[in-house]
Image 1: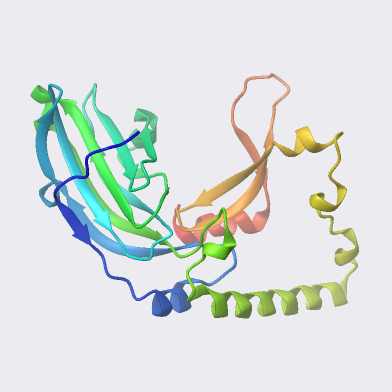
Image 2 (image 1 turned 120 degrees about the vertical axis):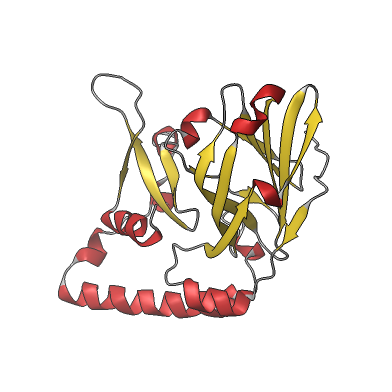
Length: 239
């Protein structure tokens, strides 16, 4: 899909070296959290295909992906919230995503994120929106070779700290002997089960892994089993 870039944009300059050093406190972190305040006055309304359309384009040079947290959002019935990346990738949020009156947007790749809201013309006055934070990724979760170069020395330091901590734990117990890496045990018999592994994103700034779990009732509710340190990420990111 293609989209017409909105003609109202905000540019955000980031000192990546300074911010990565300050915010990259663990290997699970992949994005900077930047306090920013945007509302409907920062974008532009027009009408397209019989609908009222509001757009805001956010440009952050050198970002690997972009997302935001809206701490106040109200979209009337029939309205839509869409995200567009410069690559042409788009995502439409479901109403349940903002049912609590706030929205953590889906991260999209690249240096530009366009937020688009469409509502019936008669409902335009009922739209409410305030963005309180941007999440600016310095890591590429799909290709570590595309991480921001300022992350390389920080990553090396974090790896050394992690190795030292694991060495201290191993010296006090036999936990190291119990560590298993699925990649070393993958075969045709267990490869399908491995597809139940999911990525869990906290505050659009930290990532962990988990495993999808089915209940005995077969309800298809989304249960995820994950590690305790992932729960600590949820606390530290405020998600």
